[in-house]
Length: 422
Ligand code: AMP
Ligand code: GLY
Image (tube, rainbow, N blue to C red):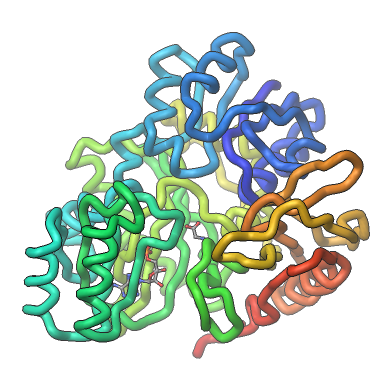
């Protein structure tokens, strides 16, 4: 089998690793990939939104399936382009990807269907945004740039001054560029966050184990926001009762609303949930697997991925059984010096070959440079471990991480540290 995988992060190396385990004869091509995917197959010189390059390559090389990792190509309509050429591809189409690409669109959708979410409103000019912010003087207030902003477009304003400055920065100074053409202001909801991944073909769906990300750079959830510094799954607080409530109050009504709205969603839907005193509330939709959540979900799934992805594409997911094992997985992100600001690139990484059973190292921002592997992005590696219990998985992941060295490396020592219900 021949597969084209689009992306270059830890999520994509994890997908590549898993696809190669499922099929040792696999011919894997990754665009653009990283040093890790380059060891499993061939990296192609196309950026993730180089739709012309990707379509041309696929039209010539005829992969059996193309799998899209990140949101940018999905929002740019890569699935529509491939399908127009009759090329098989896994992921939601451009219209469905708006659920991640526009926070204002999504808030309006959630409110229209009475789905649980924080009250809020979208604006396309700074004057009305400021007026709304001043009329709702409850702080903190959550201000979100509408479009894709690499996980940086959400600001939790603690004061009226901070809210006004944020609105000015996003809409007038355009610090997030076109992502700030519109802006969303919503109520702050305190609670526990969780990452809910649903595989759906628009008719049937399966819920994957609940994962938890660690979005802040610093231990104890302090410091700047990042793309995610580590994750674990399944979350111990995800009791059968909680899963039932998530299915009844979130997943089923969301998928029913997609159908009513005419949204043909086939792919991985990642629902960011916050568990408030009134139950689950939807923070956001992502139209792809989380990074680093995918790194901890894949070791828990026994069904071959291509089988699941093909079934989703062909809308026969209802005929496939999702087999989960009873493992627990933990991943720790090793980030470059400077991250989440400008990362230090070109720094040699040592210790990648020091293996430990029950662990693997997924590459993210890495590049092959002659015989060495060097840093090439903010999140450099995703050190992942699995075991029969979470504490052992955590221990193994930290043992493996301790073997890896590069100048400026930073990682949190408290990933999966809060293992029990608070
Ligand atoms: P989002 O990209 O919309 O999920 O927002 C990024 C992060 O901001 C979330 O993971 C939460 O930690 C935080 N956040 C977003 N919206 C809210 C809200 N309404 N209340 C509390 N925290 C929020
Ligand atoms: N881990 C957060 C995300 O993938 O959006």
